[in-house]
Image (cartoon, rainbow, N blue to C red; front, side, top):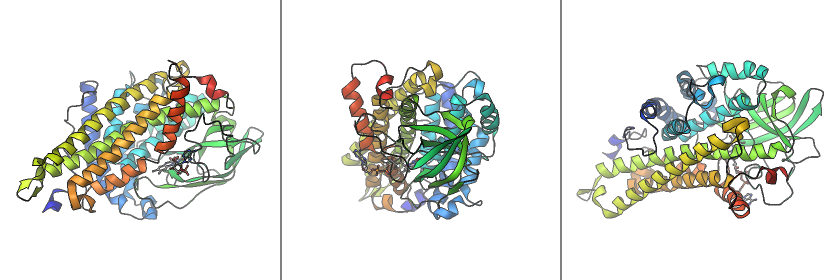
Length: 447
Ligand SMILES: Cc1cc2nc3c(=O)[nH]c(=O)nc-3n(C[C@H](O)[C@H](O)[C@H](O)COP(=O)(O)OP(=O)(O)OC[C@H]3O[C@@H](n4cnc5c(N)ncnc54)[C@H](O)[C@@H]3O)c2cc1C
């Protein structure tokens, strides 16, 4: 029986594969640790969550909370903080971060996304917040071992998905936003809403919010702030029912007079805001690329294990040349995606204002978008091939491959659609190919 091989939790080929880009023995050790967590906690929880209703997923009894709590208990969120902000002594290399993110992606796209959006408000406080705000929010978050503080990233709006995630240079007039901040003594009053696709919004305690400053402005004249989601004047929509990434509940956030004090505004409205937005997308691009590689590897391992075991017509299907070439093609794509994604993450950590702080001269949009696009495309193609190698079983709910294909399909849209990211990168290639540095002034000029 094929189903005896795989109860939907997938195969575990271990974390002993030869990784040409792994940094050293410490990275191998951490890879093993996170792999065990991905296998024993993330995948089983994701499997259950995938089959629950959107509302059940966010209820107190949902396995979502225990899985996120376990991630906090193990302290992986601190790997993204500098040593003086609560991160490990001596700092963490981009290679280590990449290994962790790939394993989380191998475990499940949804819970890996929860992990990432959780970082957004709090790591931003570490970079741009005042000492007081760090004491108030960053320290408790860094020390949290239960998942009681959780972040999300509220950027897109009902009428502004692609607008916010790309198209830096398209020359069109920036549109008006749907979350408007009105200036008051000591801060901003918010009115409007964010889209139904804000990952983790139904369960987060804090959001990193992009809001347009003043009704007369546009989305480029926005600011970036941390907002506690239990503040008066904030409500959440019902969790969305989605094709994939179901283990990360998504939903709207409504603002009806919520007040954001200036102390919670991390990037003020001004010419630095579009540069921040552009660099933030460099960081999210490099990070989601690692997760996409993990999703692709999970799919490849399902196909490999199945091809080795499945006997059809008297021989294992791995003996067929078409299956061999398909498996090789999957392997080649993953190796290339991993190598390029890790280069991109190392580049962003060294050059972006979000990685290197004030010393950051600016990460390259064209390279980071390319890493994101390539890794996401690889994840989808490999997941699709995995279903083909697994035959009808690969389409059945008994397999992991059908979930991986649904998740990989989401990757082609989340954090920017492939087309919009590619147009953004294309414009950077055309305008700046010969330039060895980031053209900050070009982006500031749009403000
Ligand atoms: C799994 C998942 C998680 C997400 N998580 C978050 C989150 O945490 N926070 C958040 O704020 N949002 C989140 N999103 C929203 C996501 O960022 C948007 O869905 C994405 O940016 C695309 O926007 P849209 O869905 O509005 O599509 P649209 O912008 O309406 O695009 C629809 C189609 O039109 C094309 N298109 C649109 N405009 C252009 C253009 N100018 N030029 C060429 N083609 C164009 C697109 O390529 C696409 O094919 C998430 C989405 C998903 C699916």
